[in-house]
Image (cartoon, rainbow, N blue to C red):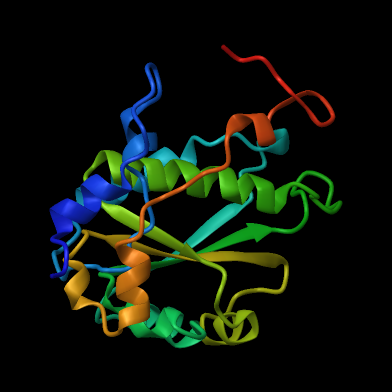
Length: 207
């Protein structure tokens, strides 16, 4: 028997750690999206959170192209998706393409941290969405050239990821068993000892 949306949500929660922000615990990448409308005020709040991300020289190189379901922009972003992303992502009420300006505006030199800064803004976006009870899923699996053409993206902008955004639905709404298995599998992360070092290869003593 398939799990309900609430049961999947509980399954995907990160372990509770004292002091960690609740949105960090509840943010996860669902593939089952409901048709529930995302309010303009909530979408504004989500992008306001992204707006206050840190960036090199305060360049704020990020740009977001946003499409609501039923609009040409949503269709264009959906058409650029590749592989099994096409099987589920177009159900999301909001599709977002993240971009980053490749050069600094103050002197025209290459900004080697543009995509990093876009990632910081996207992280704040996803955490704010989680705080509002929504779910997001970031995808690298899309055709960059097709997206650039369909959305008339200037060449001076680097493409980041496509983000599906909306409200979680029951996993049984997914179109095949592979997606259902991914949706209902437990989350896992490497232990901090493998990723946080006091010196190279030596775990930092954090507690």
